[in-house]
Image (cartoon, rainbow, N blue to C red; front, side):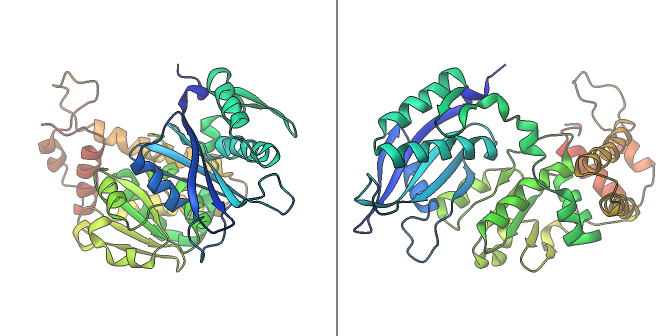
Length: 353
């Protein structure tokens, strides 16, 4: 089993000096030039028009990055610096863990003005899964279970905003479609996008989340190489890029749009209506917690997967059953249900080849 500490990849430091120049000043062990340029853009220190974000995170080419920025007050040992950003890259999705660790690193740098103690703390976490914090005692990786990171968002908030339209999100996630989310505020984007994978909880796959993507050629090309995703953008022009999405969520306006090319796969019928009503009922019940709602929705998804299994002819020697499409068609299901089950079988790698 891989320990949480081993999932760390790099630590880095970006500074903005009193002349307004923003530069990489240090990293350990190394970060590629391509990734450095992306992180310089993401940290927002170079953009005079953008206010400082305390903490941001995202994913690029299967690597998670976590950015914690801090303003330097007068009288600090960092007398030539106005702002700085501590960068962490890692293999795992766990914003709370890396926010806590990077805040410790920020305070160390603000106090000592040298990257040496940053590296010492980083190596301590890398090798021991822990480091000392003068203000908060010990930082321990084991205190930040990844399951808690998965459950951090509120499914109730999502359903309260979109009501029965949430079934479009559920269907798109089950079918591994491309979901693009727009909101001008990055924090809102990150909170919303991290919540959506709970609708396909049986997979527990947060690698589909790309919460902070720019309309930059390298980032778009990397995104296009992903078979299905939930991608967050804070640039309004993304609404015109129908080549990038099957479902477009304008979070600021609480609207959901299905692209023309995905309308058949995402056609909705009675099955979807029943699931949508279940989701809304669970969320509206004050006695049902977020985690219980997720559990019950997952139970419904597993029922659907068991229906898919019933269309297996049992002739495959694969670990997963493969679906006999003739058996599926013989059931003469409503077209929307048949389309959904067919595309779900493809998403679950259950189609005969």
